[in-house]
Length: 348
Image 1: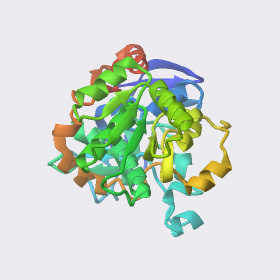
Image 2 (image 1 turned 135 degrees about the vertical axis):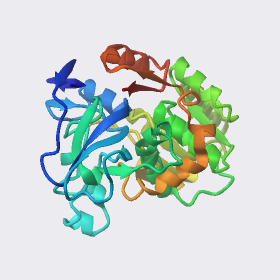
Image 3 (image 1 turned 30 degrees about the vertical axis):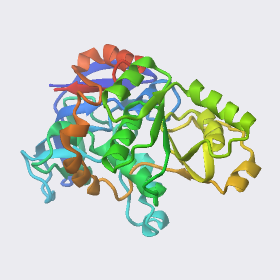
Image 4 (image 1 turned 30 degrees about the horizontal axis):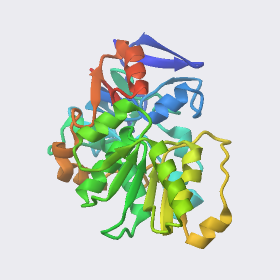
């Protein structure tokens, strides 16, 4: 049988279904090894991000091909795979212009774990094109981080060029903030400050032992106020990366940026959010405000980055991740929300 955690009309429950089988020649069925809880999943459960009324959540997962349709050529039964939950038609105007993350016909309408059943289960049937062979150099544990890290890499690419001496602020030390910290350290950046509200997440960030400064946001708010009063125009950062999704961070980040600075809007704010910005400050500093949306063209290339970083950076233990059984979903979600861990992982 196939146990799964289903969201129905805002409520989660464990259900049992028959093991799925392929229904067309271009599908596969995956026996799931690990599936993770993303910050977006928590926003869905809080009603701050849209999804289907009845859905098995989970868009970060890895496993083994159990069954493959007759026309599937790139993977076979028994292969280890990682799932890219995002898809595109390849034919609409946006796809033709190299913007598959804005695909008109598939795009968000077909996202696995949000619009189609996903990985909080023991088995998942999905289009074969969303399943990517996992190189033997990558463990299932590292493979589970491929989807979120591919989103980080897209944001990283959008920020380029970054000077080697850049002073960088990362807002939020949840799972995505931690991955940005790992990427920054791996790329050689050392002048990094990280803000985080929750003490548990502060401790996880400190345990990475990168030498980055981990502070409560109020510390920076106070420093910015003092710098303004003292006329200190050198205080601030060259780059601000927001992983919180809190609209207030954009307001503060513009004030915290130096001249020529860049703000990366990475965390997802609820639709309809509003911020108050001073356009003159944006103009006077010649700031760039950049938004990053999922992972166009970075999924496969991120495999090499994961191999290069390895478990020195990306082990479950280092990143404050913890495994649970599917039936423990309530405890898993609670402990992730508390900040005691960065990410809950369901293990089959």
